[in-house]
Structure formats: structure tokens, C-alpha cells
Length: 300
Image (cartoon, rainbow, N blue to C red; front, top):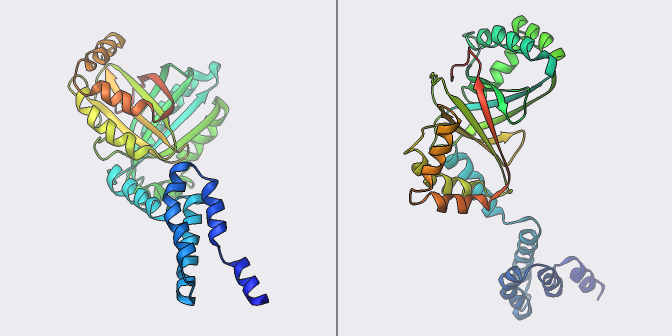
């Protein structure tokens, strides 16, 4: 009798599974209900008992933490389908003290091209910009590394590079805050090579609701074909390290008036309104920054 009582305490019973199911939304209760009924109908032989415990455990784990299978599929999808996979990009943001802006510009103009052009560093500089609409006294730099091995090798080498260490020493008194994020390119949107447009750049940032990156990418990829009729994108990335569930994409325009008319023209193309409708509901917040490239920037 004692053995049976202990066994019942350790085994997830039908009643326990039912109570867990009732605590969940109605859709989940309907999904769990057939398994609960099978608990009542089972003869509970030793072999069946093991199977029931396994099923009950999987149901409880799925209810509490989500399906393992779905998580594995999402992980594979993000790594194999979303990312281009060839490069790793780093977005650096420097908030500069208001009275140190000109000194900062002179400093990065001196050091960043030297760091980028060193053949021992497995990277190149995509661009450097100053924010002129948005977070003022802020500068953005985007670096491209030859995958994670290139990033690891370069950051390790820079720790002992006297040029880089001197740059950091002179940089720190000029800034209020620094931030970096490691990003991957979307497979459908390759980062533009160096070019001179003599225009403005717009960096858009979307903070997505967790778990919706794949859906956002699917809708946005279709909508991009509408926008490309009027304006070529510069690049698009999703965060891997740093601020997660975050997407950045960049455009260039001759001026703000052209930006305005380009965005208005896109609404006249079939499919663009549908893209906006389907992506906006996946977003928690968004920001737009107008950037002016620095003179040494490869993208300018």
C-alpha cells in the first residue's frame, strides 16, 4: 500500500495533467484534452505507465516552456535561412560629449581608417556617420568581419595593438557612452560595397516582439521588392548579440525631399500597404535616424 501511494505521488497523474491544462488558455486545453482522456482509459501496465509518464512530462514541459521541436526548428531556420552567413557585422554607437564633437571627429578620422586598412585585421569598415536627426552628438560605425573567426581573431589582436590602444585611450575622455551590437545580414539583402552618393543615409531600427523575427523577415522580403523600384537599400541586419529581437536597415537618398516622395510613391505599388500592415503588428517600437557620412567613410 505504501509503494502504491508513493508511486502515485511521483507519477504525473491524470488529475495533475488536467489541473495544469485548466490553468492554460482554452486553445491549449483543447490540445491537451485528448491526452488527459487517454490517461483515464489506460490499463496502466508497467510499459504503458512509462509511456504515460513520458507523454505527461512532455505535455507539462510544452505548456510551461514551449515545444522543443518548434524551438529547434526556429533555431535552424534563423541560422540557415535568415542569415547570409558569410560575414558578421558590428554596429558601434558612440554618444559624444557636446563640447567634444569636433575633437572626436578628428580622432576617428585619424585612427579608424588606419585600423581598417591594416591587413592583419580580418575586417573592413563599411561606414562612419554622424546622427543629424535623432540622437544628436551620436556617431555610428558599422564594421564587417570575416565571420565569427575573423571577429574573434581581430578583437584578440587589437588588445595588443599599440595603435588601437592609443585610440581607445584618447577616445574615452570624449564620450559619454559606447554601445555595440553583433549582427548578421539578412540573406536577401547584401550590404552595399563602398560607394559615394553625396546624399543622406537613414538608419531604421525595429524592436520586434520576441519570437516574431522569422515572420517579420517573410513579409519584409516581399515588400522590399516594392521599395526597390524607387530606392536601392544599403543593408539590413538582425541582432545576434547585444540588443536582441532588434532589426536595423539602412537606405540612402539624395536629400530629405527625395526621401519623402520615394516613401509616398511606394504606397502606390501593390503589396506595400499589405507589407506595412503585416509587419507593424510584430513591432514593439521603432526609430529612424538621419545620418551624415564622415569624410573618410567608405559609404558616403
